[in-house]
Length: 230
Image (cartoon, rainbow, N blue to C red; front, side):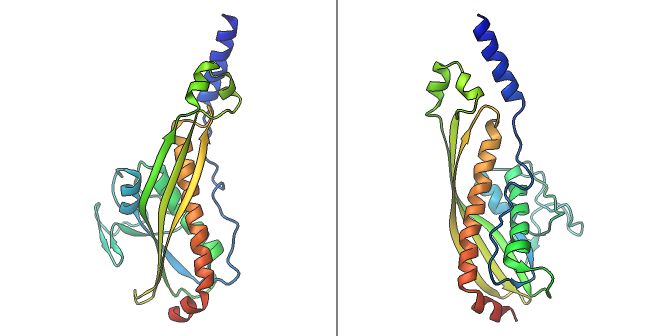
């Protein structure tokens, strides 16, 4: 009986202290050797909502006060908004805000030189997604009364594969380059992660993986892209 009580206490403490994601967890340190001139970041919020099956409070960026709530038409489609490091999107889905933060950081730190003259825009969109939880560990968790879970054994895993689309436009909104890659991540869930956070982590890591592959493609086509932006 005492043993069961101890296990219950450990699990409660673990589950009640679910770890949220650190702000710098997904800040990629992989920088292209040749940086493009400064580009303004845009995100296709409806495409991410569709991928994650999410509903936003309003499809409008909080730093864009010039438009009414709703799917505002922009040069890059409805609900595609300019974002920066201070943008807070109206959405209940944290993975969409994460996508904006990850993208803006990667563009400003690893893809472009923000100290140069602005020469165009760069747009992030989400395509098809595969997202699945695997509960193969659950039988062992139940058999051991959750003891191993309290010390980090996975309770489940989440596999996310996300189609990442990046478009680069010049200042006249002419399409300069378009890249499409699939990002992949598989993340375990321990008791202290919480049910949602491990799925959020998998989605963010899949996006980062896709952007890493796209950065390599941008580096490959740097001369062509740079020439068309001028």
